[in-house]
Image (cartoon, rainbow over all chains, first blue to last red; front, side, top):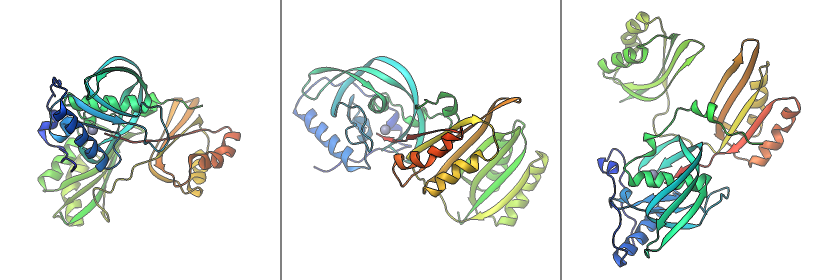
Length: 167
Length: 173
Ligand SMILES: [Zn+2]
């Protein structure tokens, strides 16, 4: 299977709000497979969302098991109609995006989230996440709502006041 | 888009500097590249990549009137390089402590010896005039493990310089 072409800025379609998935069928599962191939094809992406390949449905994939420094994670996750039910804390972190080539910036995200989502079989799951994985999920869900990280980038100096102290 | 120039403008801060300078550039058909604009100690500072048809001298002449009217000193350098050459940092260094001479040189000296490449450095003095607190954040690329840098910086901690290292994992999604 070939990777799908990725929409990049300033493509207006990236601002579109995606629709919930209603049918959990073979066609959906084939698409999820193709989305995963696309994620792996690019430069080390930990996540990808369906609208990035021009399918405006609430589907994304997150996999934080491959980071340089290991982070707490739930492995490979297919998240369909995901909903964050609880947020806690905030932290500045650096983000880039397959749809925004050659640019990275600092973004404030919740450090802990509770998440409800369906998998590609239509089964519902609940997750508690923190740190990098929670950030990845928030980045992907933003895509489903037509929001890019560049809409949330904070000034370099913001880090000064929000810095986390490492002991 | 033949040449890239590095434009430096500095002077007392006042509203409208960016608007007037970029308007003048636009009127002379110049394009903007990467830029850093920042208020430092009550001054406004601009470092900006611009490109276009003008030669360095003509560019300086074109900007001199607006620079003079805003009380800015102007400097134009022809530069090598261009856009899309970003490097992504993998380590963040944070320094804080009582303001003292040599603190920047000490920290950056240790980092340089360890082969650390600084991409972005911000330093500031917070606190009050009688109790200044020195703060510095450095984002950069280390070619050695974080632990090696930690060990190299350890002697500084004994001198009372607070320095923290953290990995920067850039999320791509
Ligand atoms: Zn993205």
